[in-house]
Length: 483
Length: 125
Image (tube, rainbow over all chains, first blue to last red; front, side):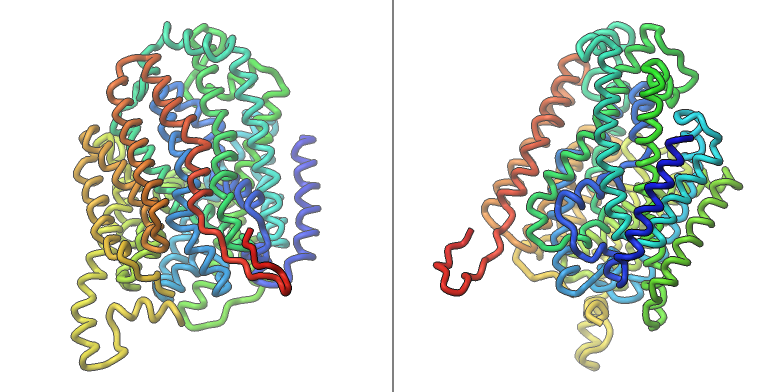
């Protein structure tokens, strides 16, 4: 309870500071383009890492062993990959054209129709994710902080909404960075403490080898194709998560990119230590009968219980930090989509900051309502997570930004096709081949659609341009981009 | 806003199509899927060549492709050995490249030209 009270006080202070320093749309949506690599790297990692890392990750280790770590094995590559594929063009466009959000980048490249489709995807994805976060906060509040779930969820969402609505990303960036630092530090402490409790890494590995050797090896008990698909999904998927890409628009100069992969990689690797540390140690402790589990997701809470109340408290705070930092980015992205991108699709000017603040609160209320009243809806909508954004946005943010031939119509079709494939395959997940991840399949189909529609549109464009110079066709997407 | 045209940029749709088709075709077969994983992830990194091609970047990407290929090949070779497989993937595929790949990015990131201050000697960095 004291933790929740402290969190609300800190959020109020950040909100007041943010409200005073957010006078323009650039401040509110892009932190004034003033951030350096350290702030953006730590905040970006905080926004991308969810509570799954602290609870679901160790639980997945208990279920499939080393196979689960293939999700984390993408960490060495993702920082550089992100900057090479998306970060550099995003920062250049942001600084040259004053772009504020990833959906505006899509608009600048592909035109207002593609921007509107991107905005719609972002609103759907953000509301669904926020509803899932609210529900997760309730469950985790009960497990770790020993407070009523509704209270934990309400406090986390209220605090996040307060500083995001009032201070936008000027406040959100600072809060995200602080939360990211807390998550990383606590993850390291908890991983170390769990391994010490298990007798050290060597003793933990030996215990698992004796009791469940199938969990070790290169892939544990996961199908190799599934492990590889997880690896690829989390490698490439980082190039398509709007809450991650949003942080590129906060950088004050292109030169800040030079150090960004190092910061991203360091922050991610330290935070992910909890997955390996608690997963391995908890599995060893369970194999010795020191903790009992009803289901794999009990591993982290039971391990923390064994370590003591201090560990439960640290885990609870870290998980709330993970939830809040992710939620702040989703709230801000949704507000930008509603107040800037969707009006632009109808040729209207962007709404002011007052409207953005109202939309931020409204989105939070809708998400909280969904999370509190409709578990079934949340379960269905929560599938629109990492895989959904990968399916919808990977083609346009990677190939779309690098290839001059991509058209606006093709970009819109690629986003819709990718999202549709992901949503269609997700309910069938149990019957799919082990290596077929719905998000990756959606992205692959979207990629093919982007290339095929762009190439097909070239012929009519060439024919049309002979009759009507400057008419529609391939150039439409790019010409729309510079409007 | 249009991406800059470059020789490497012309290969983007072909490589993207190949990577997407390879993933969809290989997703049920672990070893071919490993090839698709290397192709897709290195192709993602190689998008930078469409904007700022350089010999250093090409060498870096070849290095990443070799590291990934060896890492995945080793993982398959050691998959049945509990400790050997664990050590290989943790050390070779995860811990070893953690500092190296960001450092490669740092090295291959172009330095921005600096204008000489009035009266200065114009020495850059």
